[in-house]
Amino acid sequence: MTTKGFYSIVADAQKPGHVLVRARCKADIWNLYRTYRHRYPMRRPKADEHRDYRWRLGMKRKDFARLAAALAREVTYYNFKDEVHHRKDQENKSGPYMQVWSAMLAAQRKEDQPHHWCPDLPSWMNRELDKQDREWKEEEQRKAIGEQLKPDQTEERYGRAL
Image (tube, rainbow, N blue to C red; front, side, top):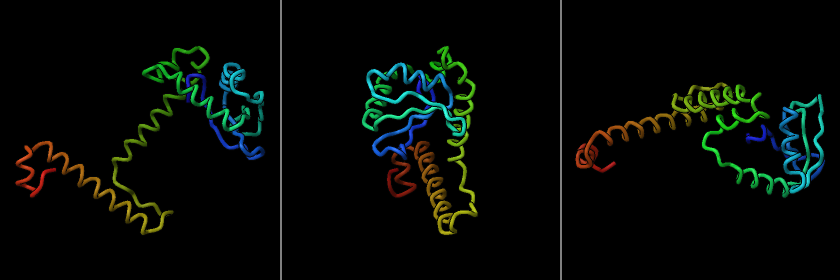
């Protein structure tokens, strides 16, 4: 995601050493093309109605690396959602970006939940995930207790400082 649009970058299976920059929205791919085509060689965007990302353009991987660096240098805002919301050419994505943000927040919060056995995983992997969950919770509890006690009290209680 950039303030110019939402893109997916994949290796070009037809051209070794090249990547495909894919976009779902026409404005996004054309924003990229119009803004950067003179500095970073790229093929003109094309639409393919039979693809999940309708819009795409191709370019050499090394040129894309330079383009990605240029996009990174353009990050001067402190809140991505606010910046996108105020851009006329991106206002249609404010809602979908909020949905993505909310979904990823939910995923982040699920990390705090105990592991639930997954029948698709081998049993040894489920056991290992359960073990990691227990160790993580124990560590969090030790940290919480350590924050409540003075350093000399943690040594007294645990035989060592936390």
